[in-house]
Length: 160
Image (cartoon, rainbow, N blue to C red; front, side):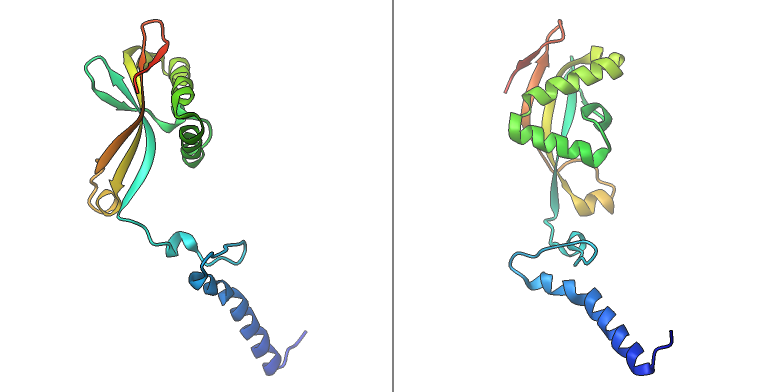
């Protein structure tokens, strides 16, 4: 099928307008993102310089901290586990979640489990520019959400 120059121009302009149409969402009070036409909020959204992230830390008898890998904290990929931690923190306060993490560690990493005396659910705040550009991977601030002690029989006692 052959198009005239006018038809091709009208078709091209129409396609460009459809592709650019989501841009108006940048000025809406409640922007709506949709697939396949997106205004790319992940790139356009203003972010604070510090980002909060929840994670689990294990404690040994000397008080040394060990980051518990996400694969021991939940099932699925990193983002799925991150959502599981957020949900557990909101709905359960983190207590049953830490018990589940302890069972996972005991089953999958028994050597690590025997060295632990406690687990903590932490919210750490990281300076994004420092983390990615300057390789400063230490948190700016940490807040304990839940702390548990592992008794010698493997049970947890809530500390706070």
